[in-house]
Length: 397
Image (cartoon, helix red, strand yellow):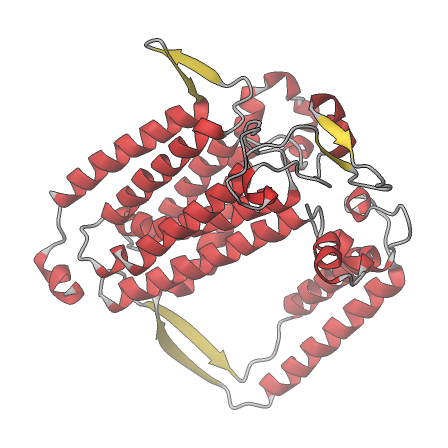
């Protein structure tokens, strides 16, 4: 396993770049998944703009005007923080130094901070000088709906972050301390996934509806993006060994590599903190991340990643070429995502989240998967009875 990008590069090439210890493998793949989702949804917004489903965005462009003082302040401040903290963590990589333990501390390098700020202010000044040398003009430019993606992403992240924190606090009222409620909302611990999903989706729908985008088309644009993002995120779970693996697998290997059949997740990120839950020391290993599972398990995150990417390919290269009714693409996403998770749950570690229904046991994820498939089927049928208006359909055709 590769807890950080340092371990990833060193294991594959033998090259040691200690400053890469600051980048968690899981976090790296999460960033990749967000970027991939941004790309996929932007491409769908562009396609729907060309089809006449989404209106073009009118943007005012101004030339010949210098940089505002606020831009100097923001760029300088961000550069200082980057130099003071990030560059410091990249350089301070002696034995036993764990960058993750120092991310939220006040430690840093004033030299790097001031240097980065000076460089940023110089670059801003060069841009300012260039802009002031141009002839002042103002024009209105029409752009595709993807021009709104930056705002949509910002709203999704902020509302999703707050939703995940608020739902967690509502689920665990014992953790609510009104005198420090703002600090509790901004700390890194305690998240509820569905709270972030609900509030993130609500924020996006509020913004897109405000700008004349029908919610069914927005959901359709987000379906492939969500599938792609999920697949890449699952690679992060697998390569970091975050504990979201399958049940024990002691069956004979059919000829696959260990990492694809029965894997012990060596050097996983859980380490000694989970030593009492089936971990063992790796013989001959010293330093951080020297634990592995005592019993090999199914590498379910890898299976999910591959299935999700395969389903994304179906959505992207097959379903997008079909003349689907509004909301059918997202309905297909719900059916496929639910089926994928339902299948993987048969070999996945459930923990204690088991429910008995009509004499049968279901995990929480299986119940959610069933609901997703049901809503997907109903959504597909309902959407098929609600085609586009003739005017828009002619533009699509």
